[in-house]
Image (cartoon, rainbow, N blue to C red; front, side, top):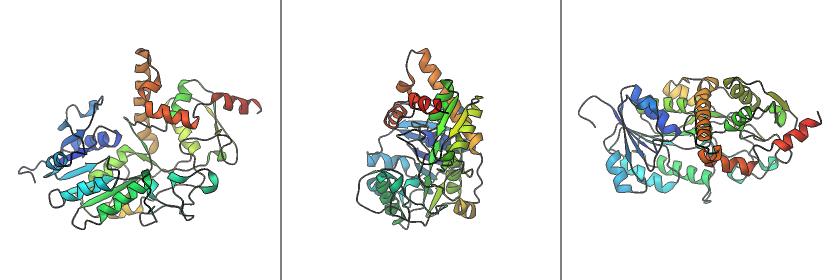
Length: 353
């Protein structure tokens, strides 16, 4: 480790939403942070006066990755995706103080054996235990889709008994610099001056949210208390989708009527990025007991920063004569595929009420 008393951290994928929040949290607490990334990023102005250094690094270059990572008190990997990434990280055993790897809550399977990657509709949606705990079943097959690959990565990391690794499972992540900010579903409606929004299932769907600020707090605690563990990483609020809508509209100082109907979405009408046929709610009890974790922010406190960032980016695009789709291409693709902004269908439904 370092000869002086300054603790050092390396963040792999450090310019994304989780990496930026973790860098800010650690640097503000006196850490010297090395941020490794593959491409360009507008950056986080809050880091300007802190001990944060950025470098270009392709994580597929294993030799370069290990050379930069060795010797740090903490290595945070926000972009590890599959077993071969775990194979890289296990080679750090004995050379770092603590490893934290971001996984996903979608690794869990329901009591009916289903998981999110294979859902085709409400009838085969996973019937999850409520709440989901870290020892609940996870997907275990050879399919090379997101959740099975993440779960296989987790198992490969945990098989290395001498590796001080903490695996975090977030839910619906929100924060500045998000390439897929779900809240845009409501933010754009407010910007478009929509007076009403339609939600299925009486607006009661619950899909645990994860603030990047709260994830960063867990990262810091895992750095202070290295271990060999898996922890859920979600907000304590467990808001319904109607409550999320109310929170977003309040942050934008917009009054939007929330109209609901019972039952699942109809031809996409009433669906949102948080719409799930059965609740997907993760427990934070283990992190509380094992690390003494307390969420620094509520959903309402945290999401405002993400909304402010998204609105600023959208307005800046307008001044450049660009569309929001050009600024948020991943969001644009998802919105088009899932019909997020089918206002004509909403108006037709509302016209009969």
